[in-house]
Every structure is written in structure tokens, then in C-alpha cells.
Image 1 (tube, rainbow, N blue to C red):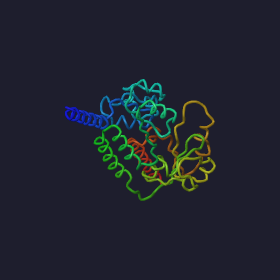
Image 2: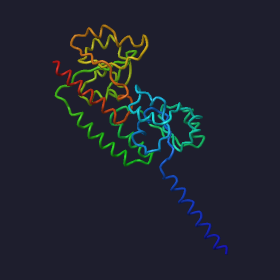
Image 3: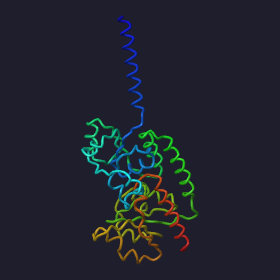
Image 4: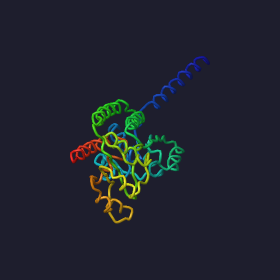
Length: 281
């Protein structure tokens, strides 16, 4: 009789282990994103009904490349208490998301997957792979990666001549080669003048230095509504008086911010800009 009970116990334990393993392997059913870029990656890859909330920023046309899709979902303010009430089984966050928020959610027993920001076009397939694994949607992620790589290869064919370009944002910030924006420029066939003064990633490129560099083209960041002295450099007469420099105007920020396949729109627009600059010569 004891042996029967022991056998039953072993069978029950085995069943419990199988059940637990199956639960661990099952894709998450209620996913909440608390980062603009994870919002967009999840919107691309998640199964219908799997993603239940995204950030408020994703609802804004100026910030999100997928604002229309995002507005079909409730928005959150990325606060731990608010997220907990949504009863997620997975939270998607960035590596710069508040550690207090991350720690609180994990202490409450909620799984949190963190995604680093993309600093190069080569990071896009990595982020898609990570999101596919987090959501149990590896096949869908792989299809997006293949499409992205094929289109990027076509767009980044080496040009006969590489014009010199500069990116300039509010407060004289700029992006060097080792940044997502800088990599977009390089892939599109431009040389980045920020490298000529040792700016590798993101930093300040003073207006005086920019004028002395006299690039073939200057691409400006978005001039935000309202009056702020930080935006004065974007409209400075010294830039418009540069002879031989093409002022390309504002770039579309939402296509440049996150490491999603949508960044190809930025590459495409820069390829078209390069052709315009070359046609002027």
C-alpha cells in the first residue's frame, strides 16, 4: 500500500513539474510596455491581444512612428503602482527606465525585460530578436529581420562620392558616427563632419565650429513650439549665410529615435537628400 502511495506521489510530482515547465515556456499573455522604443518593437511583433498597454508618448504623432496603432491600446504613465494594477505577466522597459520602478515591479513578482537603446543600425536585428524571444514570437521577429537586412543592404550601397554632412539640434548638440543618427548618415552615403572634430557619439558641436567646418549639407533637429534660447542656433544667420552649404531643414525625429525597422525611412530620406546635394554640384 505504501509503495502505491509512493508511486502516486511520484506521478503527481512529475505532473506538477511538467505543468510548471509548460507554464514557464508559455508566451506571456498580458504584456505592458513602459518605454517608447519597446512600445514600438512590441507593436510590430506582439500577437493580437498580447500587448495590453503602452506609454503615453506612443500616442503622440511627433514622438511615435506607430501612434495610430498605439492609440488602440490604453496608455500608461510608466509608474510601478499603475503598472501593477494592470496585472501584467511581463513588463517591457528600457535600460534607462527608473531603477526604482524596475525594482518595485520585480519585488512584486512581475517579470521585467529591459532593452538597451539602439546605437547603430546593426542593433535593430538584435532588438527585434530580443523582443521576439520575450514575447514568444521568434518567427515573426525573424521575418522582420530578414526584410530589414535586405532593404538596408539595398539602401546603403556605397556611393561614388560621400558629401560632408552635419547634424545639429537644440543647444548645439550633434551626433557622431557612433550613434544611431550618425549611422543613418553613414549608411545613406554621407561623411559626418562631427568626426573631424573628435565627436564620436552624442555631444556639443559649437556653432562657431560648425560654421568653420562648412559642411556640404546641414540637417537640423526639430524646432519645438514655443520660444527657447536653446533653439537659437537652429535659426542663426551664420548658418544661412554659409556659401556652398545646403540647409536641408528639419529631420523627422520619430523615424530616428528608436531601433526599429522604421529607421529605414530615415536612411531612405537621407539617400534622397544626398542625391539632391550631388545634383547641386
